[in-house]
Length: 434
Ligand SMILES: Cc1cc2nc3c(=O)[nH]c(=O)nc-3n(C[C@H](O)[C@H](O)[C@H](O)COP(=O)(O)OP(=O)(O)OC[C@H]3O[C@@H](n4cnc5c(N)ncnc54)[C@H](O)[C@@H]3O)c2cc1C
Image (cartoon, protein in one colour):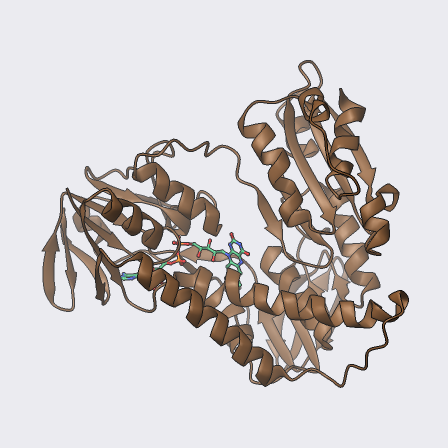
């Protein structure tokens, strides 16, 4: 079968590689660089910087373990070079993955129901998959153009003395944690009363308190009204305030990138995202699919790849999508929060296990945070989990596997967990719920 895929991010390039392995005729159109947001401006460059931040923190803590280190400073240019080398290496890997795919560089737009135009040439296929991703959104406030987006933060030539970040969601907090550890004075300004609205408030507060202890300043419940010459003005209740910083960044969400001509193709949208059947990723137009950020279901790289696998005909449990915040400490979640269970009228039980009682966390000196496990009261089925603490990003997968396979908290306790490890905290939480 002949496929055209628009967009070479983790949705588009993974799908192109899979379909090509299945011997389909695949053309992948990309207007920028292979790898999309994730590889070039998202997951990977930020995680290189998060690793640098973690090294800086470890160096500071080394003397606790009898290791004398002298840190002479942060060479921001060297960090940028390291980041670029890593991104280039991974982009070459993507290129190799696409050896059987016809890659076309250009901007694709629909000119007829199953026809796209790229670089002035028309192309048709049996199936077209839109995987065009998303771009940073901005607040409509006076002076908004003074603020940089996440792309701008990754393009900074030098480490800013001070940084104001508007938005206390995942991307805002990751940058706050990174730049604070590298030496910038960071203030996060958040509209809601608590950061990370997708987490339960107790867990989000836990992370905010840890980051506050590490030096990040938070202004919550604050509506930004204007940005004027480096000063972010906000209103919090009846009070007005201002945060001055050498760089101001906005991290207030992302908007799907819609290719031109969707109306001609008969592809419907809802609130700026392409509407799809979440079981098949089919759009309203026969033969046209949409995967990844552009359909607005879940703006995460592994969600885009999972949706690619669905289009390629693989069996994927798409209902459990773990998500991670690469701060220090890390935070992660899967499934429902306690608040969502309450709102849905589901009777649940929760267990919280702090890392300060976990042998491995104590040995590595990272005891901040806890595991919160949520199970259905009647059946014991695991409904969700949130973790704030060391290696939360890796730990959440155990619970995701359990949830995707309908396991109970009791089933988790029957599996032997190695000692001393951080995952014993998950087992301890499950013990409290069995
Ligand atoms: C700072 C930051 C950090 C992030 N960190 C993480 C993380 O740690 N983990 C995680 O899971 N997610 C993370 N994300 C989110 C992740 O990057 C996205 O969810 C993911 O890239 C979406 O993949 P995609 O394939 O849908 O689209 P994208 O990766 O956005 O790729 C879409 C591609 O389509 C191309 N394109 C768009 N329109 C056209 C057109 N008309 N013609 C041709 N080409 C077109 C674009 O140039 C782009 O290359 C982060 C995002 C940001 C901004």
